[in-house]
Image (cartoon, rainbow, N blue to C red):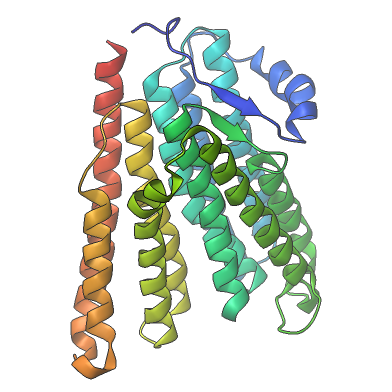
Length: 338
């Protein structure tokens, strides 16, 4: 399959893209050398995303002015995430590998960006778990819909809007941190609370609309839910239970829950791009979650040390599987392109 034959199908409804595409992304794309591969742009953007996480960490511990560098890196990441596809189509370099890297690296970026967002906003308690479940639902539902329909649907409020908002927030915090109005305070309407509520509402809306569109094309939506969505819900419920029992710190809880989304989206991304589905991924997640739940039920009276060993076994296995998804996806995409 050559680049002219490969087509990445996307339905773009993003509010900001209507203005960004003609006035920013396309003009910038004219200066990109034709020999530069779209995958290089994708990977470069991903590196800047990782750097934004490092600068957020420094801003919270050293000086707030690091937030400005975090915002800059985030905007560069957004630019790369948009320019790679434009450059690929313009130079006839679209490929299965490019689509796989785009979505797989985005699913990892999802963990870093949202972990930083939660830290910065200071979310805790029930609103934190609602926030995590909502954004996971939106991301997973989008990849889930693409897997079954072949079309990536970008809604009115999507990734661009989220990154612009977060970049603006970082820029403001560089001069206002640590003002209490930017932190979540239970029972008080702060900027953090407003952002969290807005994100929860729009994310659940995205998940519901994806499910409705999928139902119109795939009538056996209940069977798909049981096979592909329930494992994610069970995994998230188990991690929430661990946190509720005081067995996990909030940082581990956030990263573990977001990483589960990356793991299960990886399965769908490989299946969509390469055409091979892993029949054991969902079963393994259910088994891990089930055993983990049993270990922490009171009447089994397992020692906490046993849980700690199991937790690290689970999270190491999870990220090894994510890395293995990258290897399989790259190899499979290259073979498909030949």
